Amino acid sequence: MPFTTVDARRVSEAARRAVEDLQIPGVAIGVVDGEDLAYSEGLGHADIESGRRQDPALRQRIGSITKTMVGLCAMALVDEGRLTLDDRVVDHIPEVTFHGDGGAINVRHLLTHTSGIGEVAMPEEMKDSGATLWSDTPDKDVLGLFPKGITVDVPPGSKWAYANLGFALLGEIVARAERQSIAEVLDRRVFKPLGMTCTDLLDEPHPDLTTPYHTPPNDDAREIAARSGTPIEDEPTIDGRNIKGRFQYIRGGGAAGAVQSTVPDMARYASALLRQGEGIVRPQTFTEMTSAQYELDPRMESWGLSFQRFERFGRRMFGHGGGVAGGWNSMLLIDPDADLALIVHANLASEDVGRFTSRVLAAVLDVRPAPLAGDVAPDVLASAPGVYEAVPGVLTNFRVMGGMGRIQIKAEDGALVLRSRRGPWKTGVRLRPGDPADAGYLRLEDDALEPSRMVLIRDGDGRVTGLQLDRLVRMTRTDQVAPWA
Image (cartoon, rainbow, N blue to C red; front, top):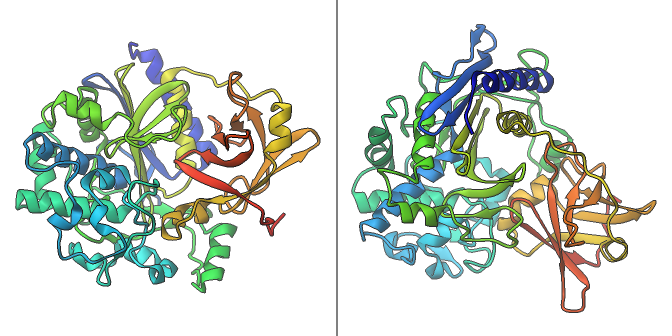
């Protein structure tokens, strides 16, 4: 699939329209075609107040994309016989106290977010979860993240739940094996070999780093804060919409997301991924990393070894996103069949960055998604209505409860409508058939360019007992009544 000048113009026009429509302060994007950065551009501002323009050469905090780099270093140790996926965490970091079956947690669990631990180490930390990951001063002490130990919320391997703490542990395991800091390991194994001269995991302010922005808290954030008794400070906007953030350090060594990089450097990284991790891990190891290691339904998102796997506009891709407090948001998408990659660096913490990415990706692939149509099957209309809540696990449901909460599906005027307690679906979205061969595979008629997916889960008698959503969210049917309905 050649990337021509006409293609670059199409992508640029789509990106400019998206920046304007979504009011994004600034974004730098790049499209990698094989080994070449075929197109890159900066749009908007790197700093609104000074008028400094965005530029692909400026630095971005790439957040959790860092995890893929740490994962590659861990798998390089596996290649060398110095680590195995079945190694127990307690054997590498014996100082950690686990409350629950911590002895069953292994390296594979950390790489796949299936360790059974959540976003905070202890239940009492849920009120101020941000303090678990962010600090106003440098803090590279991994063990300091959990002075009271770590709660194993659910049995390891039984549930997927995104866990920054898991990658902090993985980074410590790699660092101890290498007898270097995780920053030094990434520099030696990834950055220097790939020629990424403007990339590091030092987690320090830098003159080339873009200024972070975020938008005012929405009603959901205010409601959650009120429930927890946490006050929300109303910050002044810079331009009537965007609030200037501040640099906060990532606690615990930075393996969860402290890398800073530029679009040209990330293009070198993306090109190495298109070459199956060439120079970092063996090709067969990389194939294992990008294969499904935790999957509930092959049509839905799944997880490899540190890499997210998903379908975008009918194409199978892998990659990772990254958000940093204050406000940066990045995305790296790899389409191996087309030998293409998309890099997005936005100095804004907002869900709008995901919408921007979808619009630019559609332009890169030259696709125009068809609108959803049709009605759900009569048996689905009759059997799906009910209330659904996340499968058990308090700490491992942290993101689910904050992002959507409980879900209710109702039959209304011959159609199925889904409402969530929080998030973009709380006003109601219609469910549409998603697969003519499976009436239980549905699409949500939300405002996304590429609508969300949902699969109904049935028991042996055909009764709907639960559902699965994107991001490997599983919910079970409950007889409780949704209080907001």
